[in-house]
Each structure stands twice: as C-alpha cells, then as structure tokens.
Image 1 (spheres, rainbow, N blue to C red):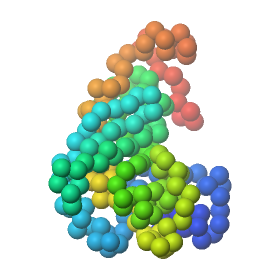
Image 2 (cartoon, rainbow, N blue to C red):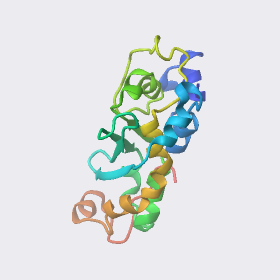
Image 3 (spheres, helix red, strand yellow):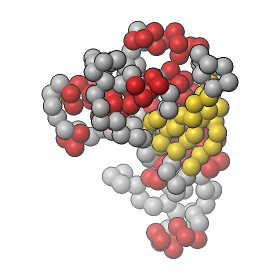
Image 4 (cartoon, helix red, strand yellow):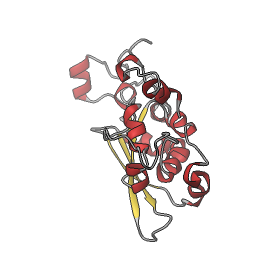
Length: 196
C-alpha cells in the first residue's frame, strides 16, 4: 500500500487534506511485484507505441498489446498535469519543457480488466491520480489494496521519459499571438511560474 493510500484508507484523512504529488516514477514505485505475478507479466509486455498527444487535456495516448490475447491492444492514457504550467515557459527550449512536464504529476488510465477490476483504478482514484474516478472498493479481488497499476500502465510508465522528443514536437516554439494577447507575454518571454 502506498504512503498516500495508507493515509487515506487507514488514517481516514480526506484527499483534500493531503497534497497529492504523484509522478510517473512514484506511481511506478508503488507497484507490488508479487501481487498477481505482476513483475513477470510486465516483462512480457512488448511494443508500447505512442499514438499521439491531446493538448486540450494534456494527455499522451499509447497503444499497448495484450499479453494473453494476440491482436488486442489497450489505449493507455497518461495525463500530464504540469502541461499547462510549462507549455508556454519559453525560457526553456521545447525539449527541456517536455522533460519538466514528463517529470511532473500525472493521472493514468487503462481500459484493461486488471486496471478496472483488480483495484488499480480505485487505488488511483483515491490518490487522485486516475483520469476516471472509481468509487467502488475492490473488496473481492484486492481488499488489501496491493499494487498501483496494471502491466500495461507499468510498461508505459517505465518508458515514458523516452517520449520527451515526441512531446517536445507538440510544444510551441514561440508564443502565439493569442498567448501574447491573453497573458501580455512578449515574444521570447515566459509567464511567471507559480511559486518559483
């Protein structure tokens, strides 16, 4: 059980009382390699493919093959919570901004049965790191709330830093006329980041 989930479930603290800062690395670190043989199954996932980026929501879309059903792919999504903060921070080049965004907080989703029904979506909902909310406690399949993500998300989170160049291509090189008008940002200048 992750440290945040422990505070939410065991101590009874509300999500509003806890500042949840969960990056791809911290979510990945909360995996339980022994729960439902997660470590062995994750190694079997091959061929993560980047399918595109949705700037409106700050979501990177991936296609991940099923291990057990050849020809089946899951549309895995990782929402980059720092996208709006850093996309227009022009004091950094596009690659540097992409790395900042990828190292920031994320929310995740996978439509596979494991994520949906073995408690991972519930666990991430409680930690406020799920793109879709799941209020139902997994009292049958995962009552101890072990692990954090399915093997498909695990595979994506493991390789996420390697997609910095793909994300960088999606970032603007210079401020748009709209950004200059709306924020008063002069060409080549960046908006101030919150709290430094």
